Amino acid sequence: MAGRRQHHIPQFLLRGFADASGTVQVIKSDGSSFAARTRNVGLEKDFYGKPGNGSTDAVITVEEPRVAAILAQLLETKPGIVSSDVAAQLVAHMSLRTAAWRAQTQGGICEAVNQFGQRIQLPEGAHPLVKQIIETAIGDALRISRERVADEQLQLLRQHPTPPEAARNFASMHYAVTEFGDQLVLPDAVVYAISERGTGVPLMGRGEETKAILLPLSAARCLIGFHQFPFATTADEINGYSFDASSSIVIAHPEWSANSSYMQRFGSGTRQFVNQVGARFKAPR
Image 1 (tube, one colour):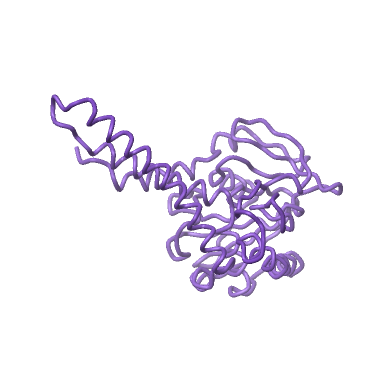
Image 2: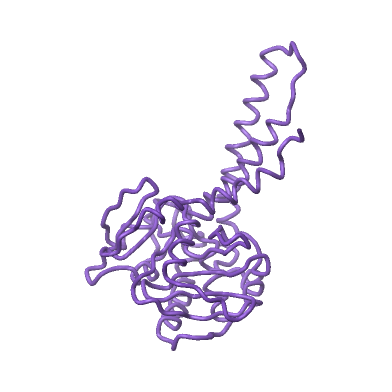
């Protein structure tokens, strides 16, 4: 990945959803879609910062062959129960590196800042300048919050692109590889949780806080982490969860078609997460 065009969704994962020419379908939240090669999807200029020795980009580049080998192993293995320690390595790596993680975390924190700002009640007749100062302060807090989230993500990845503590937490679950016959899509979050309410939501906490963890490995296979065996699901349910957990795009095979029910769910899990964070700071009535 070394360079300024940096994939937050790695190509070794995107290829599992591409046709023979290396083309995938990119579905946007507004319902539009377009075809693109994997080298042009899931990337951003300097997403991990400027490249160079010791940079976050350089650290991830060194780690990627090991993670890609884990993915290849899970794609080649017989469907069924797989090593929790091995699966948790892939989950821990992918749960932190995406643009969706950054956007979802920023969204949650900014909602909290906004809710905190709404709790500030100025006395009647307060000078307009006071209101302006408070609004400016809130605006600065939102900007700083976004910057801090990005900086924290880069720092964590630079320390270890597959965080050991996260891997240990995720390894507390059981994992299975299941096959679904080239019907699956890939959310921009890549890996996500199933909440107790049955919604695909950002994977922000420990494995024990979720009903299940899903990571589509290819259009045909999905890695599922669960606490109680079996966790049964269908391709249609997984795709619905994937649309729930997406922030801006969903990746699919060029011949795959999204139905209206999927599009209606686009980003619902992300909004649920943001609202839950903000709700903790709502002013009492």
